[in-house]
Structures are given as structure tokens and as C-alpha cells.
Amino acid sequence: MSGVAFAAAPQTPAAQESGAAAADAESFVYDSKGQRDPFAPPGKGSGGIDEISSLKLEGIISDKNGMCAVIGGQVVKEGDRVFTAEVLTITNDSVTLQYGKERIELKKQRAGEGQQTNEE
Image (tube, rainbow, N blue to C red; front, side, top):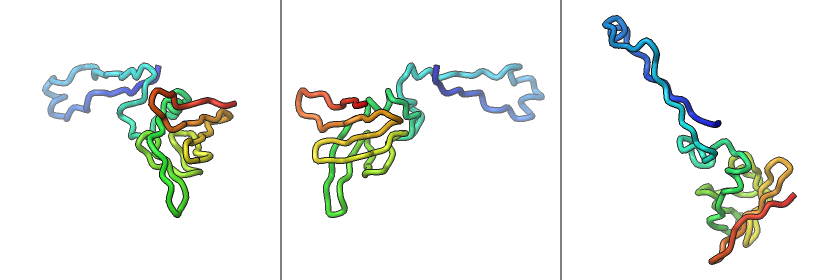
């Protein structure tokens, strides 16, 4: 189970002396149920294969300096990282990511089409 734990804030000495503090601090554990941690900044999650495979290619930009892609709200170029995957190539219609030994190709979506394929 992946999760984030929260503990109650420490009590001030005055509150502890008055007996207002509980003997045990209450805690809450967030269970993400395999989803992206909502408390992590975009593009900075754990970067597991499920998280990387669920990324969306939102656009491809070409200018005099080369090509960039917008993936999950993050602008990247070849050599950059999205989570823990490296951006290998950017073409006019797709982006290839390397995650460990696995390659993931994100394709521009057209109406009614899927987007990503896994290559080994």
C-alpha cells in the first residue's frame, strides 16, 4: 500500500500541562489505491510504470530550436525526464519514453483512437 501519513501537530507545553493533549497523537494514512499522489507536484510523483503509462501527450511544438512536447502539463525536450522516464525521441506525431528496459510510445490522439503503445 502506498500512502502518505499525517500526524497531529505537536502540542504547546501549556496545552500538555493542562491535560488537553491526548495521550496518543491521532494519525491519518492516505491510501492512493494505486493512483497518483495528489499531494505531489505534477510530474514529480513516484514515477512507476502505471503512472508513466497513463501519461497523455497533449501536444508537440516545433520551432527553430528543435522539438518539444507537452506531456501531463509538462513541457519537455529530448533528454528530459517525465517522472523517472527519459524522453528519447520526439517526432511530429509521437514521443518515445524509456523507463528501465521498457520503451513507451505516446502518440498524438485522433478522434476515437488510443494513444500509447509499449515496446520491448
